[in-house]
Amino acid sequence: MTKDADMHRFWTLPIMLFSLLGCRAEIHLGDPIDPPGSRTVTTDFNNGAGQWRVAVSDVSDSQRDQMLLSTGIAPLPDDVSGQGYRLLFDNPSADAFVFLRYPLSGLPVSTNYRVTASVTLLTRAGTGCAGVGGAPGESVVVKVGAVSQRPQAEGYYLNADKGNGSSGGSDAKVVGHIGSSQLGCDSNNYAAKTLDLSAQQGLSVVSDPQGLVWVFVGLDAGYEGDTSVYLTDIRITLSP
Image 1 (tube, rainbow, N blue to C red):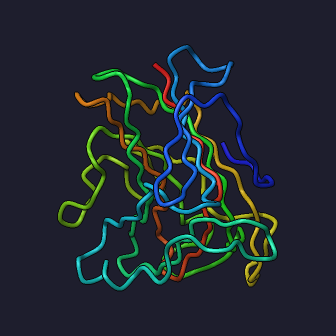
Image 2 (image 1 turned 90 degrees about the horizontal axis):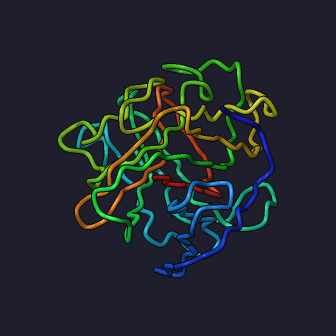
């Protein structure tokens, strides 16, 4: 389910605060509406990237080294206050998957969790626009995933079932695309958009024997031109 929205934050009762490289990444007990035993990670990137790391799959090794034009923490555009994690890349394979991953530790071992999430980003892609390989908005879909092993490229492809293009897989689900109806096809401005992963979409994961789950948020791109988004808020909840 998607909805255009202002950027927002989520507040819950923290039981642990991870601070690495200055990033605020908070691990919480679930909200009162969440089932008992839930765990939630929230990040807004205003103080750095922390344990979030960018990675790429579905491209060749030579393409991977050249396609990331600008990634990392950056001031938000269009006079929006704060920082975000910018992903600016081209798509030489017409099938690139560019994603951020995060290790969520301290969970009960070998426990099955249902995954829900909310991701807010800034996009400059409109809807109903033409582009090489596909539309710059609708042909760049956002996926949220969770696995018990570190998600990374093994050879050409991701070592997890994220699906392909606009379809999800067993380890990642599509939550929408980056197109915004607030923008025109030639706009250089950005608009905020919030994308939600619901429990009904059926994403689940089992923590490993050390109580670790890797969560990831990524862009699966069919559009072959440059794509630019700023991830501003990520909230992922694991519920037993």
